[in-house]
Length: 120
Image: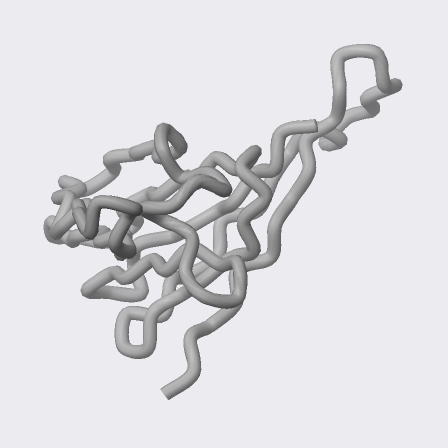
């Protein structure tokens, strides 16, 4: 089954003109069955939000590094209304970037909303 691609959003820089709503970003329902992915340049911030009525989880798949080590972020629990941000280590270095240059994100329910912000 193909993963659902998350649209990467780029926030405004401090010197850009920002009108009302111009700094907003969109959270999208995650694919709780097939998983999600996004293109990685090393400047992304993944934001997860639990919009449901129960605790749900986020898992980020790792890949073996040059010493054949893996370290998935496994079943990170989000209580109702919780936000989480992930960025450290999810770069162009080995360990996170899958074949094809993407990061794999899995949730156990579509009530987990996701946004990917690419820092300028």
